[in-house]
Image 1 (tube, rainbow, N blue to C red):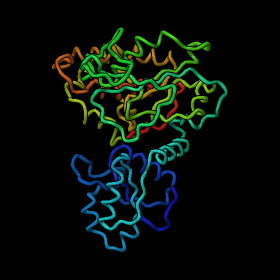
Image 2 (cartoon, rainbow, N blue to C red):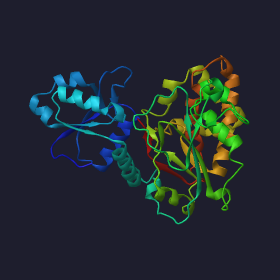
Image 3 (cartoon, rainbow, N blue to C red):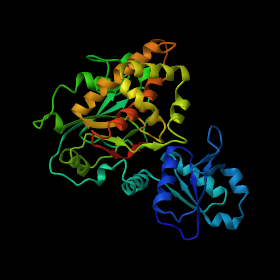
Image 4 (spheres, rainbow, N blue to C red):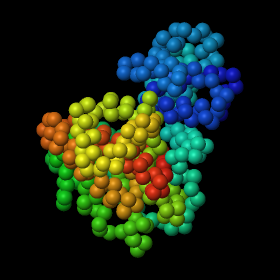
Length: 369
């Protein structure tokens, strides 16, 4: 991000996307003065992030002179589909210097940031290898998905699969998660994880390549969220012995407790803690430390060696199933996505606890619009 000499910077947005951009800019461009986060309305937003205030745009604009607005640049760090409307609103309030933080710009910012800090290593920072691995990424779709404005062709290694196919008659993909061994009928709680279960039980013991399991990568993305992997990225996998690719984790304040407090009821959270204690006591012991840090793997998006993904699924799904049994009302009596949200926290626990034995790298997770 090129600095505008002497101009103050405000970041439009107050969620993980904006906070991650703020942290990267503060690290990479320490001389840049960031005055505040801007939002349309304060509804549900924290009063401050990163030690600076979160301000409603209307109130912020009223407090600035025409000259001060000229000396302020606004970085629009929101989902791309709403950025044009925000630009128009900023113009109406007299802000002439604004810039969209597009997916490509955010991805580059995250790469530079994490390389600088030496954590959450980017896949793109590894040398390009010579061996092309066997890659199968399954893209979870639903009959309730909204059409995408930019619905381009998919890479050859991406296969759409309808998640929750047992819950409806309509079909939106040739592959469905209600064949073979499945939990498709529980999609209302598991979300895209019913597709991951199907992959685990029906695809990961068939097919493959001559290199064996270490040369095979399987994964899950969503119809609106997934990695944007170039051919060079795929060539980085096998020769660098990559175990798993995860999205860059997003920061939460004060820690990732904020995620489950927002999306998961306390009674359900206690059921998860009990299930974890019963089935995986060593992970239960490590959980408080993981919850006390600020980074969470969102979206249940993953690409991993077949062996690594199988081990993760063997660990994950018994915990979620036991949580269903302990929940009140039980998982079979409801449909509120809670197990899908828990999956994000459990993915964070599993891969952060195993960071010492697994070679985990990271990539930008594109939001398709």
